[in-house]
Length: 307
Image (cartoon, rainbow, N blue to C red):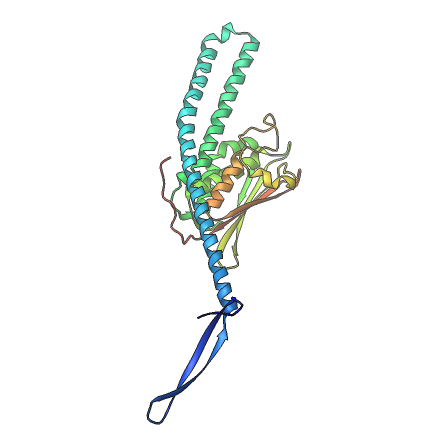
C-alpha cells in the first residue's frame, strides 16, 4: 500500500500480520510488521517502462521490415517487367543490326555495337542478381531436411564446365543434413565456389576445400560451421565490411566480370536461415569463408509468396 509522508514523498509498504486468539477462539489482538518496498516498486515501474519501450521498438522494427518487404516486392515487379522489356528490345535490335548490316559497318561501328551488347548483358546480369537478392525473403521456400552433400554434388555438376576450364580441384568432406531452403543454400555454394574459381591467382591451379564441423552456441543449440577455403588472390581484411554489401567490387570490371552482388546474396540467404557468414583472407593468400547455420529451426518458416 502507498503512504504519503508529510514531506509529500511517497513510500510503498507491505505488511504481514498474525491474529492472536484467546481460549474461546475469539480474536483478541494481532501482531504484524510493515516493511518498506519502495525500491522494489520503483524498479518494477522502471522495468515496465523499459518493456513498453522495447515493445514499441519491436513494433516499429516490424513495421519497417514489413514496409521493406513491400518495397522489395514492388521492386521485383518493376525489375522483372518494366526494366527487362526495354533491355530485351535493345539486345534484340543490336543482334539484328549485327546480323543484317555487319558487312556495311566499319570497325569503329562494330566496336560500338559490341560495347552496346556487352553493356546490355551486364545490365541483364545486374537486374537478375537484384531480383535474386529481393526474392530471398519474398519468394522463400519452407525449410526442410537438406543434405549438404547432395547440395554440393549438384552444384559441382552444374559448374562442371567452369571447373574443367579452370582445371580446378574441389575437395568436399562429409557434410551434415540441416533444415534449410535447398534452393537458397545451393545458391550460396554456387556463388562461393564460382568466386573461388574466378578470383584465382595467375598460373596457379584453383584448389577449393569444403568442410564442416558441429558447434554449439551459449544455449547449447547445435550449429554447423561450413568452411570454404581457396588458394586464390585473396583480399585485404580491411574490406571485410564492404565485401558483403550490394554492388561492391574490390577489382575493376575489366579484371573480373560480375555484378558485385554474389556475396550480398549469400549474406541475405544465410541471415534468413538464422546464421552468419564471415571471411578470413590476406592478399595472395587465398580466402576462407565461414558460414554458421542452425541444424534445426523451431520457428514457423515463411511460405512462398508471389512477388
